[in-house]
Image 1: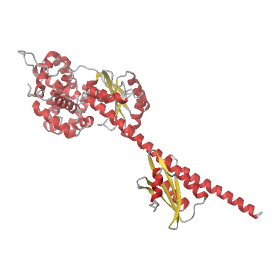
Image 2: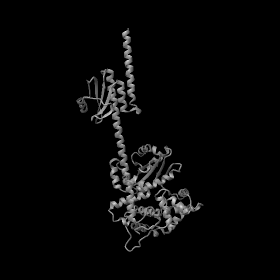
Image 3: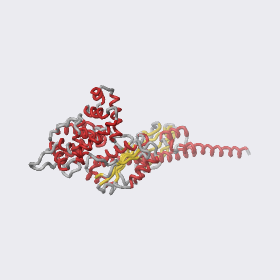
Image 4: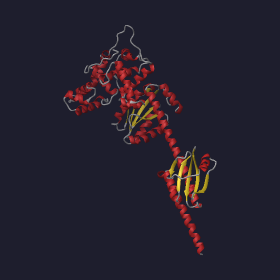
Amino acid sequence: MTGRNDGTRRTSTAAGEHRAWARELLEHLRPGGRDVRRVVDWLAGAVHAEVSLRDAAGTLLAGTRVPLDESLLAGLGSGRIASAAYEGAGHHVRLVKIGHGAQVCVLAVSRKARFDRDTSDVVTHTAQVIELLLTARETTVAGHRLRRATADLRLAILQLLMVEDTVAARRVAAGLWPGLLDADTACVYVIESEPARRERLLEECLDTTREEALVVRCPAMDGHVIVVSPREATADALRSLVERHPRTFLGGSVRQSLARTATAYGQAVSALAVARFRADKTAVYAERTHPERLMDPAALRGWTALVLRPLDALPHHTRAELLATTRLGLEFTAVNAAKILGVSRNTVRARMDRVETMLGVDFGDVTARAVVHLALHTQINVLDGRAGTAPGAHAPRLADLLAGPAVGAWAQELLGRLDRDSRNVRRTVRTWIAAGGNAERAARGLGVHPQTVREHVRSAEPVLERRLLTPGTDLYEVVLAHLAVGDLRQPLLAGE
């Protein structure tokens, strides 16, 4: 009777202990506890032993280093044997091979007491758990690497489009996204959110567009996601996405050729500024009357050729590289242009300095930047940017282009909107432009506080429907309007 009761108690206790260690081991498979080092430490405490986990090269991955039989380790590493047990130097040692993918590791358990059945079960099951964790970690790492490589590839395609290399962009895209850039035109969208939420937004953009659009983390702005898509349905899909997320905004461009991706990107960023103030949080760039469309096309092309003529002696690829970099550097800041192109800011500045010298201008002068921007903007819209004027023809000058009645009427109407402000905002904006966009210098000239200058310029933005405090097309159009009405001195370029 007593023996039967003793036996029953031992069986119950053993079963309870088994359930206890099994539960503890399973806890290490939960999402919050998947740590191989913790599992090895747990095993050491559970079986009162020294435990080590080594890779095939002998590198200690977890636990404590245990003296082992090298010949047995070699057998385990080669796959000749799966496990081994031996006794030496007063210790009992168990070795278990753990294979995960192409890698092989060895779990070694050394203890003074012999391995009974329960202890052997603990070691065996722990080895299985470690193998699962190592395999999962390897899969996770491989997944991260694949996602990073794919993201880098998408960014590289965008950078090629930004410098008008559509042939190379299509070639790169064809490998993973066949047909993505087969269309000749596309729209660019910029989605803005809090930087901490961008990764989730990026994944939703990929799911929403079903990989039928180029989705890229903006390299210049932490909270932006850029989407380039030839499909009309993308706009509705992105609007639906923005509706579901608070504090998320969408700006879109008009349809542009792939070679004008940089222009479309600028339009999307401009539209984004409007979207922040709209109830539906979305806006598409509004096609408005641009000054270059009011100029004589032939005269504008001829003037552009004259302005850019100093660059004609350069090799084609060098000229194209300088023009593309300068175009982005004028549209954005040099720092952001560097991030977009994937080069250093020093490289961008060096290229722009070279163009600056060859064209005989000073990019510290906002009027010079606006005039060169006009030439570069025109150059990308004509088939041959080097086409000059015909022999004997009158060489066009900037003054001739701005003197047309249509341009004059446009400039007067645009700047006339500022005359309604009793604070003389128009004078402030003119002085601020003449001071190179520097509020402190403009304030000294006006005899006011720099903050007053900034407030005046900021208040002029909604009236003119253009961004002024950031470089780009909006600001340069306002500068051209001032040049057209004679409120600013026209810069002289080497080509003229």
